[in-house]
Picture 1 (cartoon, rainbow, N blue to C red):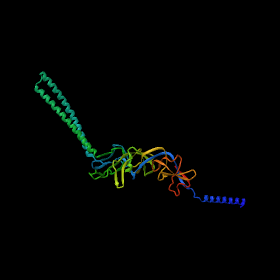
Picture 2: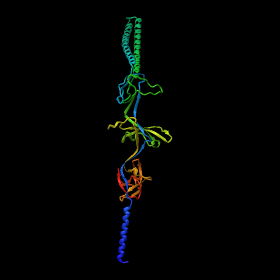
Picture 3: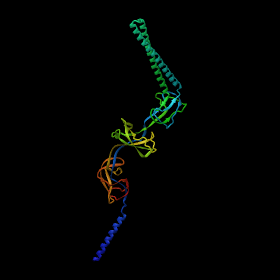
Picture 4: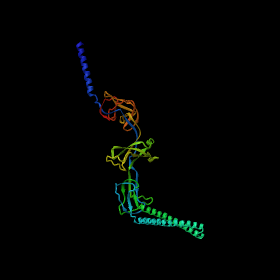
Length: 386
């Protein structure tokens, strides 16, 4: 074959190779669209969450009623009203006991007047007896007269003591009558909001018999102290202690978190079901009145997330980028995915601390559930997860 033929053959082969390469390039699989996130510094927490929904409760809630039965004469409150401690909530008809109380007070005034009269006479009798004894010593009066004067003084002293005892008795009658009056009056034991009223003016109110609960006359809630009570799995409860910071989420405000702290951990385990042993935990709101037009109502369903440990400014990645065996997929600058084993620290459902294996700025894949996402595949970033 001539030199010219060799050149033509070489050119044809080169052209064929280019065609094959171009065909392979044109028919190669398209890069997989993936979502990525950067390994960046930030805080990471370990948390404990409730196993079932909890509920908002008030630190103080009193369902009160007067201890006596009777017809409601005064009911100066209404539902939703905010009252101060000692505010009159309800008063039964009590004209009879009020009259007996007034009678006892009048008797006390009379007894005090008698004390003044009797004790002044006693002072005069004692003085006269002292003077009579002095005159007897000088021989001006007889012994018999001195004895009579001293006897009269002792009698006056006994009378004074008797009327003073009557004053104490009258005071006791006043206290008893006042107690009877107070049994017909219901006052707020603390400041709060009137949640419920069971009864109307003119209706007859009967207190609960022993062992038979009835509706309370007034349900009073102190909304200045609210907390969430929720069950925590017994395995997680061992890591808890009072005072730990927590986040509260309410179903009524799903996009907002409320700060709180652990106020109580039950000293026993509930075994409501054979495979559900839990510990009741109470998390108090740091600010039960957050403002912004957000009312926190008793009875709201709520979830709690208790922070057991926190580290700030550590290298972290989204937990969704972590595969079994502490492996991650990285997107290289050439668009090829590669696998790497990393060392992890604290972790929660959102972020995981990276102790080794990654550097700041490395791009990890978070869309691991997409078809074809594996080491060696070509990929392109669809968007970057914050």
